[in-house]
Length: 220
Image (cartoon, rainbow, N blue to C red):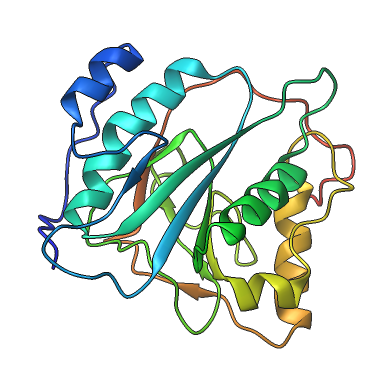
């Protein structure tokens, strides 16, 4: 059962974690929620790679929890933080998050940038027969797909699909190449990329300080 409404306004107002928790009493400690009125068909893990974006994290949680609750998802949010100094390794953080969530019996894995907030709750966070690229329309790119082989931002895979690709590469430090690498892995594994309509799969990008760009990034 879901209570989706379609387009929703992204709330960019920040609040502290204590206030956020008080406004979301249905969310259990650890960022987990299960619907009361039905048994969900799958357990969804939302995995965020994270470092030094506290405000973006709070704004994301303020918007994403209600979004997922309206969809009737049985979900848990995992924030995987890179604490050590050095270049950000997004792919490694996603792999760590996957391993943790899989041990807790989650079956659908949404690999999610922390600065991209969904605008339409018809964009259901669930896994399909092929890997899904959710972020096909982002406001800062005028709601157009950036390039045809884009597989970054927010993607969804079952455990079987993720293992078939052997997950993200741990070799890319900085920002940018791990998504292109995963796209190649998906195609070489004889799977297709599924995308939803740009009328539904729409996202607002929060402002942030850019990470160092990986020198190996493929120029599109």
